[in-house]
Each structure stands twice: as structure tokens, then as C-alpha cells.
Length: 249
Image (cartoon, rainbow, N blue to C red; front, side, top):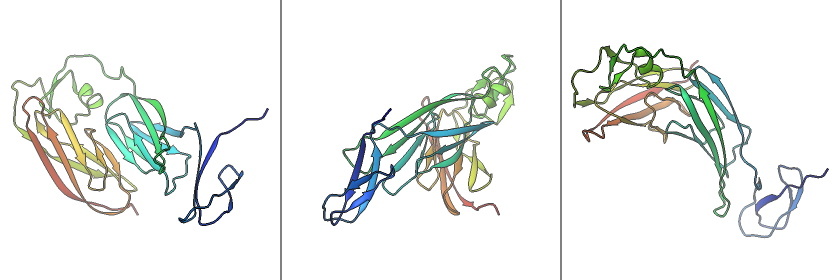
């Protein structure tokens, strides 16, 4: 049985030339006035990727080869977007289901982006016993117990007992831990009444996760900022710190 593939090849050539695309089939170039550059895209083909779960950390990898002409964009399903990476690790902060997507954008304005999505499940949704042993989280929210606070909401700091009084003050702070291979784990230690948090890692990456883990491209100093805010009080606080990222030896 013969299978027919629809192939679109974009060629910029200074003269007429025959080239071979990634599928091994011969293509005849067209005359143009710019430099030689070839990009072949199989129409209707979706980008694919694989993932492997280890605890709350998931390793992602795509078999697509990144070229100067292709732009990779990953969406983690937890308000985190990662750009221009073929292989990386991402640590989720809460148990549950996440729809992750890989989008590949073409440099050709008329070419539509290709997108592939997969739903991943992290942990056991029945991990925590529904026992009322309340704790007051650092975000001034009362949680059923410490297991729920940490595993379902990503809260690592709390006091025993429910929050007795609503504290409308707000202070933004964070700490970070050097993992390995330029991976940094950030932990939001802000206190007060807040419900949103936005990270700027100083290298073009950002995140809306409470405690994100970030892979930096190269060693160096980065100006990292965390902004926390409350929709109730409309208060906004930002904390910035210069961090040094060094590759493990």
C-alpha cells in the first residue's frame, strides 16, 4: 500500500538548484535573490514529545530537531511557559491532572503553528486523609491539614490551627536551592494575604507557579523578581534578588 505525504518545502535560493529535504526526496529549488536556506515541513504533521514522571518532576523531550527557523513553545498546564527547549525538567507544585502542550511555530507568516497536547497525572488524588486538623498557611489561608496545604496547594510554611484573624499586610520574599545542571528550585516564602504570584527569572522566562523549578541556559548572575498580590485587598508587593547560577562540577 502506498502512503502519500503532502510536503511543503520553503526555499530561498540565489540560483536554481536541486536539494534533498529531511524526507530524502529530491526537490527542485526556485530562483530568488536571497541566501540559500531550506526548511521542510510535513503538512498536517503534529509535533510529538515524550515525558517521564519522577515524583513531582517531569522530564520532557521532543524528537523534533530545533533549527534556526523553528520556534518551540511549551505550556505546562500550571501557568508556566517554557521557550526554545527540546529537553528539560519541570517540577509541578501540586498533585492533579495537567494538560501540557508543545507548539512549533514556523518562520513563514502564512504557515500555521503545529500543536500537540497530552494530559499527565501527578500523584494520588487521595493521598491526604480528609481529617480536619487545620493549619494556617503563610498566605493567610486555612487548610484542612498540613498534607493538603503542601501537596495540593504547594504551601510549605504554616502554623498549627486555623487562621484566626485576617491579616491584610503583605510581604514578598523567596528562597532558592541549587539543584543540578543549572536547575534552581525557588520557594515562595511570602507572608500575608495573597492569591497570585508572578516570577521573572531575568532570562526571558517567567512563571505563575507558587514554587517553580527553573532550568537556566548558561551560568551567570540573574536578577530574579517575585511579585505577589491580592485581589481582595488590591495590594501588590515585589521582591527581587540577584542570584548566581553555577553548573555542577
